[in-house]
Image (cartoon, rainbow, N blue to C red):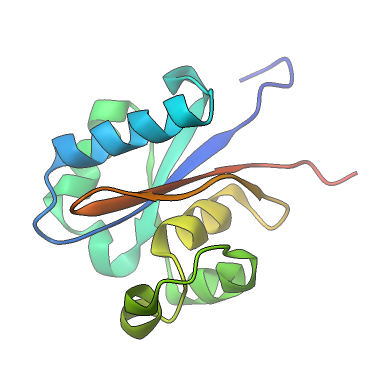
Length: 134
């Protein structure tokens, strides 16, 4: 991606029952809500606990982007920058939003949220933009 185009990372959290089509639809909805296009999407990220589920790899394949796995250390490092504070997410993963933390961690230490977590029945999605430090 040249010409100063932003790198957008979609972070996702999802229940084990989520299907790839649910995740893809939610990512597309998030991109639309943030007035971004699928062309802007550079990565799909989630936590290690969910990364092995078939729906994650299939979603990344359908979106034609790399699947990025965020480990616990990266998740913890991103936690202070998360905007959403879901009691369920905190209890399960120690972070207010898996989607937001995964997006921020995958986009790097200077990343900023472009879209806070949005939720569907079985998945959540947040978008982060890589900000180049001056």
